[in-house]
Length: 456
Image 1 (cartoon, rainbow, N blue to C red):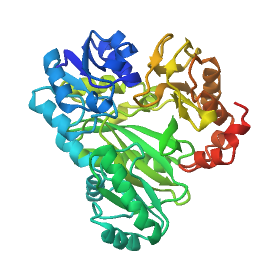
Image 2 (image 1 turned 120 degrees about the horizontal axis):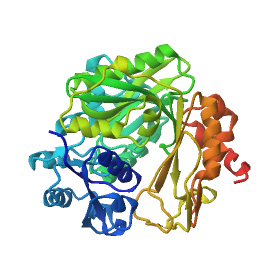
Image 3 (image 1 turned 90 degrees about the vertical axis):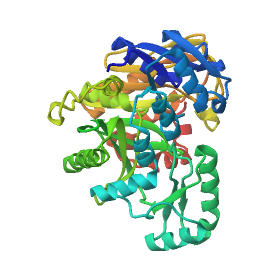
Image 4 (image 1 turned 90 degrees about the horizontal axis):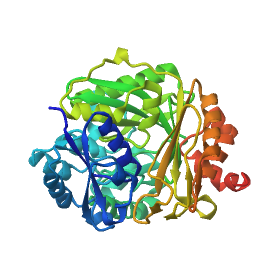
């Protein structure tokens, strides 16, 4: 049954994006909002706004009971969780399912299985998808961690089994470091996700981060090609592109096939992303985790395929089977997305909330800006600092970088600091232009003073 009324249990630019996608399909929207977000662009776009609590996320966007009650009261027949917050919380999805409301995403059992990195790894092994050598499931205790690390070989990476966003991750060089870092990672994982479970894997130096977008209807699965997300700061993605830069065709085909294989194994339904580490020296790739939700960087996949991923989510959640096969999906050109945060690059990326005194979106052909900004909007300090995603498309990668430079120069935001200067510097860098980077490249580049030298 097609969705008639959609409750949007998120905020910021993704809530704006979901509102627009739903309205394009003729779906009524109900926007959840904390008391701090009532003047947001998402609230202005929605047909109805429901206040779900005070500004603190724990008392609003992360409050399962409050949100489920709000959905029921609104009369919405479906809920879209966006990304972050409760988007990969099995307890929330179970509560939604129990209330007879459609969740725009996979079911609670799939999220519990694939959202737990250790369980997802086990599924990948069973499917024959390559994984980074690591622990078999969760680490038991510190003694178990020592045994696992000795078997895998240092350096190792320890990760939180639940959640994402780079939290709960530590690189361990030797046993002495292990004694200190395992408790740290457990505490961070517990604070961030309410789950202190960890697992361990071999640390691949100079790895690249490649991910594959999939869509499934519970029976059939297709991939929408890959994205590269190797430019990261503090394990947070900064610059993403599709297709991946300088990736051999044989590897690209194998990545897509492996993603479909694993998603089919778990009868995946809705949009999801499978993430991999790629060793460019050996041309090996390894599955690391699955995100059972929409990704921040989905627009670049839309740019190269012409498929609206959020609308596809809504149609699948409404009961439609996939209306195209793998052979119907074509890849055209190259797309780049840079994340614009309200942060000051000149002061250690300090958050920069405040009043947007002047705002003018970027102009030009093949330029898209997904944002929560408007002139006169006050950015509040309670949430993630992402305020927009600048997406460009061109026939090839070099042309896309030129288009990005044009777009960055035409974007005007005054009253707050943003990370635009960082992206201008990256777009001029020779290594970036040649695709010669990896997941540790950006932090090394900044440590060497390249950002300061860019005269921003």
